[in-house]
Length: 260
Image (cartoon, rainbow, N blue to C red; front, top):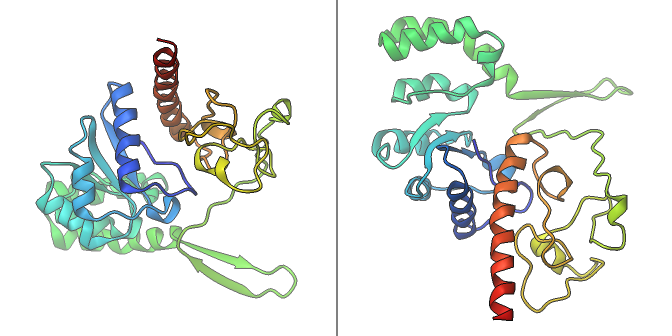
């Protein structure tokens, strides 16, 4: 499963280049993780189907919460990309619409009930029986999609829907790069377009723009947790690592051409 970089939303054209580079560097089929609430990349059904035309991008985990787009993909575009629902409270809807799989958090909490829903709805086609099972699963799924914050001083509670991302205790450990590679205020390495911002030091030294994962030293690339703006997860680090290899090859090829 492959998710694009977080925090710095890619244009659709850049996203296609990113996915093409990663898909070309590995032999495994890829599940594109569509999670616009975290990546900032919101795609139409047409655009997602276009991603499916990239060799190796075969599946979609859709965590957009957009039931209309999900239905469009399942009903009209399964020849381009196979869509799986990834939004917990749309699980019943997705399976009933014909999704061949569902990726949802509640299945890790009550796996037996999740299997029973799948067998009843997807395999037996028993809509009435599946509705009864879904009543309990709905309550669990809805609970997992909400967060209640409590003020420890006043006791006031606030329900916050949507996306909540908490990162605690991350230490980039880049003291060795101080003064040599540009870093943000927390010590994560700056790459790509971030290097062109006014308050960055050391400055990007060349007239050409830096590559997506290139640091302030041309030809030096950063991938994974150490990079500012990256997703601090293994799957993302693997994807960025594959892309970094492609960028290194391109950089070396440009040096060869320059000295030819």
